[in-house]
Image 1: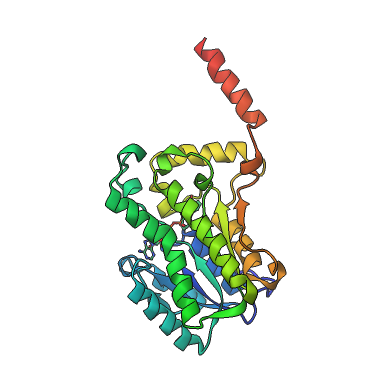
Image 2 (image 1 turned 90 degrees about the horizontal axis):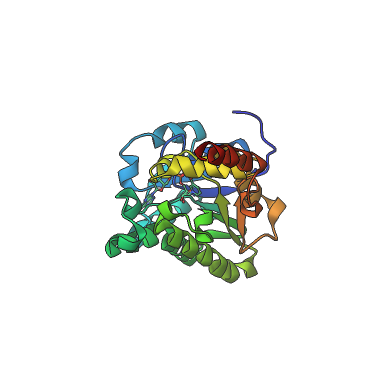
Length: 277
Ligand SMILES: NC(=O)c1ccc[n+]([C@@H]2O[C@H](COP(=O)([O-])OP(=O)(O)OC[C@H]3O[C@@H](n4cnc5c(N)ncnc54)[C@H](O)[C@@H]3O)[C@@H](O)[C@H]2O)c1
C-alpha cells in the first residue's frame, strides 16, 4: 500500500458496500486505511456469503459486521456492535449501497414492478436515513464527523437504462440535504458524491452500461474517474480539510456535468453521418 498523507489519523468509521475488489467502497476502504483510519466493514449477509470481503478485512484489519440495511433491527445491531468495537462513536460513515430489482430484471421504466420499486428506494436511499437515525439515537455519531453517500447524475438527468435508480438517487440526495441540516449544529457534514460510470458489479449490471461509460468518458474533459480516484476524493471529505462542506451533491465526473459535447465526439459523429449519406 502506498504512503498517504495521514489525513484520517485517529478517525474511526463505518464503510458500507464493499462487495469485491472492484467495488468503490473497497477502494475507499483501502484509501482510508492508507490515510490512517480505523473502520468496520459492513454488507448484507447475502453478499458476505460470497466470501470476498474476508480478504479486505485481512488487508485493513477491519472487522466485518453483517447488516441488511433494509432491516431496522439489523441496523440497530450493527450500530451497537460498532460502538462496542470502538468503545465509542465514529467520525465517518460511507454509504455505498445500491440495488434495484427492476434494473436487474431489465424492466422498462414505464412497466416496473411496484414492490421492487419500493425495494429500490428502501435499499438505495431510505437506508441512509435509517442508518443515520439509529446511529444518532445510539450516540454513535461523533461531533465534527462526516457522512458520504455515493450517487449518480441520473438524479438530475434522464438515463433511460438506469430506470428507477434515477428516482432512488434523487431521493438519496434529498435525504442527504435534509439530514445534513439536522446534524449541522453538531458540525456533522452529510454529502453525496456523484460518481461517473465505474466498472463495478452494480455498474456493469445495468443494461447499456458500456455505452453510458464510453459516452461519459468522451464528453468529460478529464475523462471518467476511476474507483481509486473516487476513493481519494472521499478521503478529503472525511478529513478535517472540508469541515464546512455539507448538504451538497458533489460531482466527481471529470467535468461531465458542465460539458455539452466534446470536439472528439463532434468529429466522430460527423464521420458516421458522412458515411451514411
Ligand atoms: N458503478 C457505477 O457506475 C456507479 C456510479 C455512480 C454511483 N455508484 C454508486 O456507488 C455505490 C456502490 O456501488 P458500486 O458501483 O461500487 O457497486 P457494488 O456492487 O460493488 O456495490 C453495491 C453494494 O450494495 C450492497 N447492497 C445491496 N443491497 C444491500 C442491502 N440490502 N444491505 C446492505 N448492502 C446492500 C451490495 O452488497 C454491494 O456491496 C452505489 O450506491 C452505486 O449506485 C456507482
